[in-house]
Length: 310
Image (cartoon, rainbow, N blue to C red; front, top):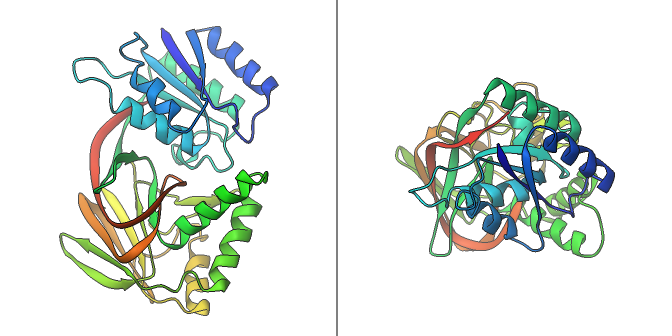
């Protein structure tokens, strides 16, 4: 089987030695071509060409940003060609997507899982989320966020450009600073679904699975019923007092996740479409990647969009 191995050389949790071990394991059973990413969205270009170049499988090594790029490239495969299957090896700081699939966050163990799945012919089809706006037409694998979490992502990216590593500790530090600094208290958002909607929202998430993210080893679950096999779920923070908001966030750490109903927030389950608007530009992210500021984004569930080897 011909496989394109897309590697992010800046992946935060793998060394050159680890990459060599992984490549050796893959090459023992696959006809592997290695392509290293050199700039943002390079993985989109590489994976978009994979089917044209005759690859049956695309494997990536990197974080959730690399995964998002590869997925968007694969979904752009020309319709007359068979889209390659996809396998993920974690190399980032959070690796939310692969851990939500139930695969180990250790890159060597994940490689072994992929090879076992290939031998057994094991794969699964998953739904994806899709965003559209006057500036976007892009897929996401696990979450999109308007407001506070996107502000966190943006500031972490700024810290990384200054030489800091994107560790769970850094995310926590930035999140707490924004939380107590008042950045979360801006009720400019509105969420609309087919069944109705709500205004004066401080922070909104749309999820394609659970968890939303991890704090180290601990999963955060604002939409605990969200699944890759269902439509989209959403969470909206409707009150922003420190005590209540802190309590809501703490419940996301519970094993069963945040209850579907409670004071200070609303959730929606298994939605085909929804829309989030803002009265002024707000920070927006998908899969932990900052996209800039937006005033309106439409969300769509795309059933059985991708075949995953895992």
